Amino acid sequence: HLVITANTSAQAVRMVAALGLDDLASLAGSTAPDALNEADRARVAEALDRVFRTRPATEWETILADAAVPAGKVRGLGEILEHPQTAASGCLDDLPLPGVDTPVKVPGLGFTSDAWSRRPLTQPEGEGESTRRVLTDLGLTDKEIDDLARAGAVAGPDLPPRAD
Image (cartoon, rainbow, N blue to C red):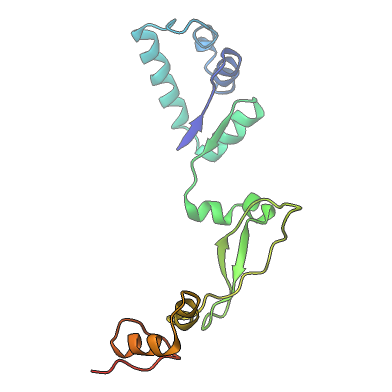
């Protein structure tokens, strides 16, 4: 799939020329909002459909870019993650995870700011590792937290087990 935004007459003329559809140049150059009648619109749609089926979207993306026509291939997540521009932008961060030999690539910010610096990512806490800290920050006492753990309402590696 390809997204094309030839919104101006000049872009439309460059697009049909790049596609080799010179016979549509007079239609593409029309600036009136409703200049094309139903038959003309059908003719343009059929011609575009026929031409775009002849090459992959990546080739059309290059051809249209060379003609200064805004266009881009619709890419899936896998393609975006593997694209050289994504790697060059620095918007992917490595996240080390326990039990995984290589870090996992995760999206980060594709821009920087003088107001803050990027920090290396750290692995997330394990399940329940922050329970006591969070509940303490909320004002609960150790006894209240332990009582909640024994009742089975909360859990964590540093909390007492549920009392059945």
